[in-house]
Image (cartoon, rainbow, N blue to C red; front, side, top):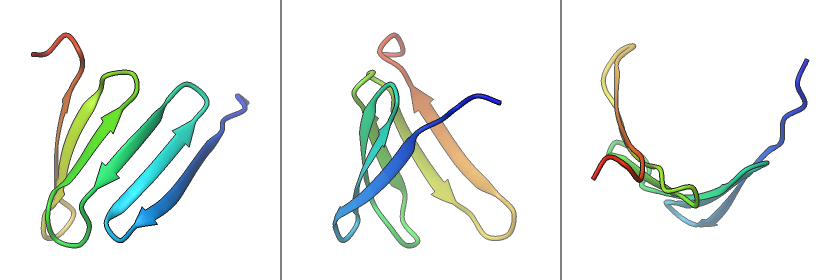
Length: 65
């Protein structure tokens, strides 16, 4: 079983700092609106929870300009 590390800190309302073994990221947004995440590895993710068991996510890396 691999050993993992992940920690999330709330900096301000609606802003979180996420730390794992390989990178850090900042997530903004809370509640019913979309969430935007930017990672130190260049990954950018936008996600939105939809009613019921549905959700939407779009991820871009440095190569996906």
